[in-house]
Length: 457
Ligand code: PEP
Ligand code: CO
Image (cartoon, rainbow, N blue to C red; front, top):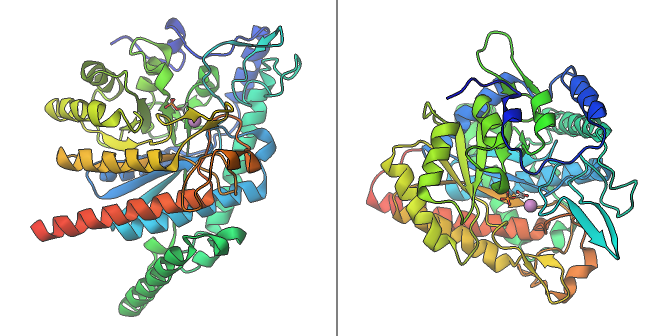
């Protein structure tokens, strides 16, 4: 394989990059970005990698979730806190159901760049650059807003830093303390059809925690604190390159803008610039896997991205759609097993299930999402493999973007609070319901396994 540098991707075809009119301005910004202090550290990254390695062996479970696209105007305290709350609540439910520790990774603090089908968009005879996320331009359809402005890379980096700073302070200040799950309650929780199930579970966990502490005669140190890691699609290569650094006392290069960057489905060409960039960084990385991925291509990509076959390095985030998973996933699991590749399997039940309503609104049906996820558990289990994570687009707010769920939201109800800038997200109630349903299934699988022999956690 050829020599790698943080900029060797520039010799390959880079898909999904914005076209900048002012190249010099872009170079200046990249230069400035590369001098700013990092957002995350190499030891946090290494901790996450070892936790993901444990997840790939069935000893932990990954919960990755957040907005499809973060937007600058929502870098606000309630929006961020609500996202943490729903992720904390979901992870509590999953710990309870799966009897495994949960790794929480937010799609936040940098999820500002989006892939698009076309470079340009035309409305009423006017053609302007497509919206590529707040890192690049603004969604409003005017010439000045759609201008691809390199300065926005700095604004995105600053907001990522503000977001992470707030997340870290909340967690360090005790917000994520398992003794106080009431901190995570959202105002509208009490009215949710699922709130009793959740409250019962929380009380049960509180009881076990107190019981363990009574036995131990002290607070259960490690488990009463929970961490969050950050992730985003590593799409905008000049931005990612600017964050790619060496650190003292360690070999290799780290992307210090996020703990866990992933390669989006549209940029998985093995000869392309994204795969070239990702192969050289030391972080744990994700790769989206869709229906077009053949077993041969997958093995080629795994060999490039994880040549040393290191556990925890590569997470395959599969996203086929409710009608496709049953045919596409089994051959991929077979190929990975046959070749002895170490990967963590994670299911994204969102991106293969996007549809449009009669009036053209993008939505996803709760039943489709749940069914893809349930099928994923079954397929892995039947193949003797382990589904070690879920990847969800969600928000802690009370939006109406996906239909179905306990309240039976209809197509007509979608317009009530449809806020997403890109893909439809599960709202707070739907996300919690999904976690409860998944936890029940995990619980049943554990019971069944327990009948067959002892299970060690
Ligand atoms: C996304 O995660 O928002 C996304 C664009 O997904 P995919 O690359 O799987 O299409
Ligand atoms: Co999306």
